Structures are given as C-alpha cells and as structure tokens.
Length: 165
Image 1 (cartoon, rainbow, N blue to C red):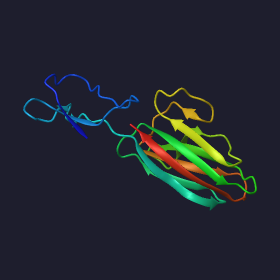
Image 2 (cartoon, rainbow, N blue to C red):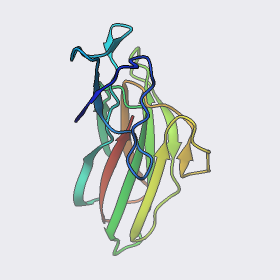
Image 3 (cartoon, helix red, strand yellow):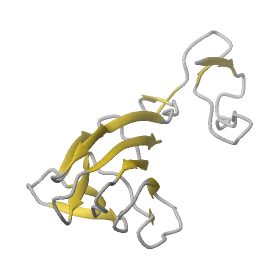
Image 4 (tube, one colour):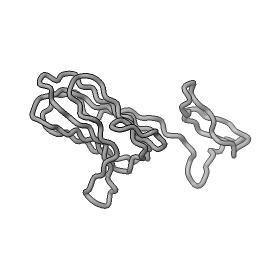
C-alpha cells in the first residue's frame, strides 16, 4: 500500500503499474488527513486469486459458491485438465444468484472440455463477448462456478479464479 500526499485533493487517481493496472494507494492532504469521498475511502481493490476446486479426479458435478462481499466486478477462471483417460466430457459454468431466490442464472457457459489442457473463461463489465469464453457481465454478490458432467468417466482437473475489481 502506498501513501500519496496530494495538495490537489480533488485530482483523480492516476497511479498505475507498468502494465496499466491501478496501484492501491491511500491519499492524504498536506495535514496527513485521509482523503474521504462520499463517505467512503477511495481505494482500489486489488485482483485476488483463489482456488475454487483443487486438482482431483472427479466423476460427478462439482460446484463451488463464492460470496462476493468485497464487490469484485469480474472474474477470470482457469481450468487445468491434467488427466482424461476415458475422454470424459465436462462443461464449465459461471452462474449468478440475485439473493432473493434459490434460482441461479447463467453468466457464461464454456464449451465442453474433452481432453487435457487449459481453458480460460472471462466475465467482467465491458468485456468483448465471445461465445463460450468471454461474457460482458458483472459478478453479483453471490456467484458460483459449476462443472457439469456428461458421463461417468473420470477426469482430473483443478479450477482457479482471479477476481477483478
């Protein structure tokens, strides 16, 4: 975390890493008072990586629910299939829930995966949508990753996610 002393307190945050991502920083005025705007501290969330499903051999549907309490807007999901001895067929889904019911809605459904290798799914506001890989959508307060299965063949995979501010 970086502290920036700023006499032009109304100036927008412009700090960025060399690859263009925002830098987390606290803004203070000449007296060292923290810059607060609209009653909230103006901080940028940092992308956060987590494991949704550890690498394991599976034959049944796998689901993991994520409570998005920090208000992340998007996600990049990485699926790594390392062993598929019988050519199993699995289909990844990113789904949302309004919180008002038990019903889930589809944010993105990936293409069926039938062999080893990596698959990447992306869902975030402003994304250029692409069938089965990218959705222009925002993560709700409750979302989940679900891997549907088409058969009872064993397949070994892991699923990781990077939550995007």
